[in-house]
Length: 238
Image: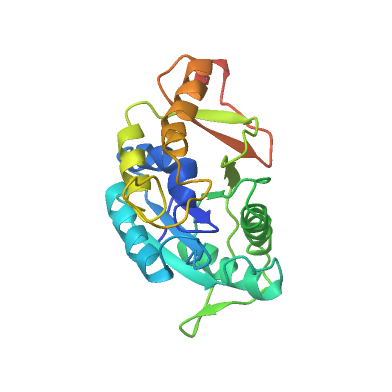
């Protein structure tokens, strides 16, 4: 299956928190979108790998993505080496996306910048003819996405561009809250974490609203780019 957009996250819920309103908008425009999680988030303070597997499946249904896979790398301990790069390359070649979305280039959780660089490097390597990969015994063709963009996570990194996601925030919030084990729940007896506060849940909305304010719309999501962001002409900017 060829996809238009493939979004990678170091953990289940990274994609939802970082760029799921953009994904929902692209799907509404007829684009085929998939998600690949690098780990099962098994080191998370709350929940378990099994719980997060189900939550990820529920979130995927809410967003309407075409496919979701998990590479089951070791949470907290995966590295940007040949072994891991080849597994990511297999996903890129399998789905042949025009655009790849991946973790923030700098962030509080060590897996986020690691995942960001791993996926970015794999996108380049995936276009090299002499790197051979197979899936289920079938040789894969080389493929390099046209664009690699990084969504913004815990840190308030200044975006290179923003996407107007007005009208899609409700779907984003629903997808994020599908991870009920991870976020604010006043009835939970599990330990508190930086993302379990009510303020963090509220921040999903107010950060998007603030980015929207800066460009004159209701809500926006921000991204950084590895290349210059180009427009067809001056009238294509909002």
